[in-house]
Image (cartoon, rainbow, N blue to C red; front, top):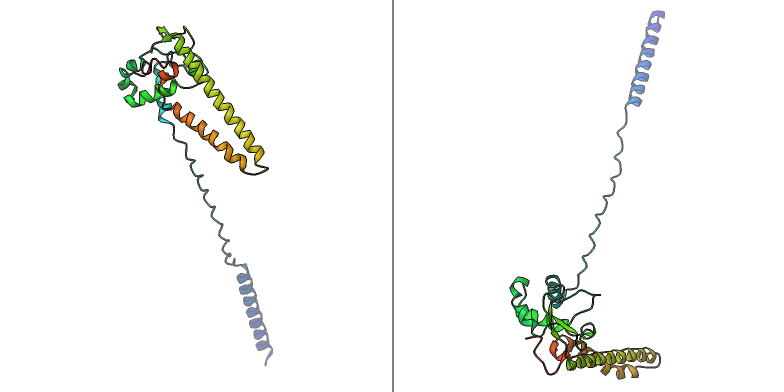
Length: 217
């Protein structure tokens, strides 16, 4: 092989080596495919808190609320003391039944509940002024009516004290046995009956046995 052929071969090999080097360099310069980023976990939507069931409001309470709003002087809100109502005020209320949105039965129940309890009995004292729906004078409390109110108040307090005493005895007996629990049950039932009668008894019976239907009718 002549010198010229050897030189040409050497140039050719050098050229091929250069091409390979450039190709390799270009290949390394190409960015590789980026590996897919891990999928982010989707946030779990917060579950809405279950709506708390509100206790239904006693219809009588709603009825009394309407009376207090319409006739605040005859039906004052707590802590203001109650006032003795006019004899026959139920008849006056019936004239406003449509405006109040209350039926005759609803008005009757409202008056019964309003006139039953220590807060009302405390105002039924001898010679106390009775008021009409507008708070105007409408008679006085008779001695017999005042005596009746005092008797009902004393009976309610006695029942309350007995129920509290039975509760204390029941707690103490729980460490010794269940015998006292059986003894206390009749008294507790009696107290429940007393409370139940409060919503059924006649308001006028609470003031005077001689005027059984005067306030309601």
